[in-house]
Each structure stands twice: as C-alpha cells, then as structure tokens.
Image 1 (cartoon, rainbow, N blue to C red):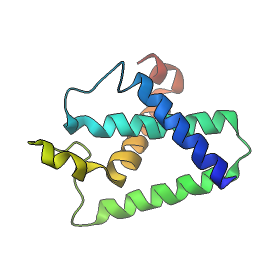
Image 2: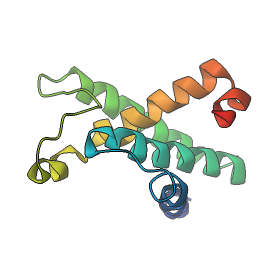
Image 3: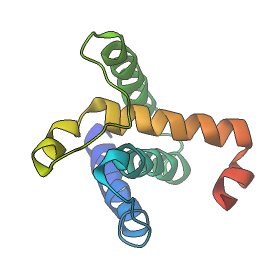
Image 4: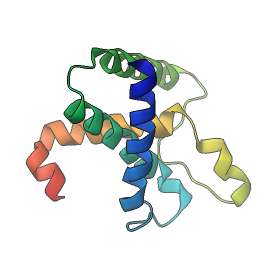
Length: 121
C-alpha cells in the first residue's frame, strides 16, 4: 500500500500542477509554497477520496506533519514565502517547508472556511 500510495500521491501532485502552475501561475518564485503546497494538498485529497481505507497514508501524513513542525523549530527555518532575488536561489527553496507547511496552511484554510467555500475560492 505504501508504494501504491506514493505513486498515487505523485500522480495527483503532478496533475494538480496542470491546473495550478500551468493554467494559474504565480508571479514569481517567492510564492513557490503555494504552487507546491497546493500539489501536496491535492494529492492528499485525491488519495483520501479514492482510497479512504488506506490507513498507511495517514501515518505518512502524521510523519510529514511531525517533520514540518520539527523543521519549523530550527534556527535555520524560514518563512514559506521567501524573497528570491536571482535565479541561483531558486533551487535552494525546494524543501519540507515549501511542500508540507504550504499544504498544512491550505488544509487549515480548507477546514476553517469549509470545503465548499474553499473550493469556490
């Protein structure tokens, strides 16, 4: 199940980029958290809806949340929105903060606003 959920998450993540990233694009790399966070968030939504009995995926999300909270306590942590001043800095921001914390913020918005309002937004 873990291998299947990983593959399913990867496919769902990349499919999410077809809409958010290709059709709707951020202005600059500083907002990469929204792009990658949305892909990660949608992967979780897809797996939860398509395979609700895969409890193994829940344990992966718990691990990811723990890792995100841990990385956020380090002195080296940074804001999810990072100022990018040149192309050389772009590769440096693809990390847990971008993917997992971005997804967590979108998840909080979804639960706070309600899924119905979140989807309309």
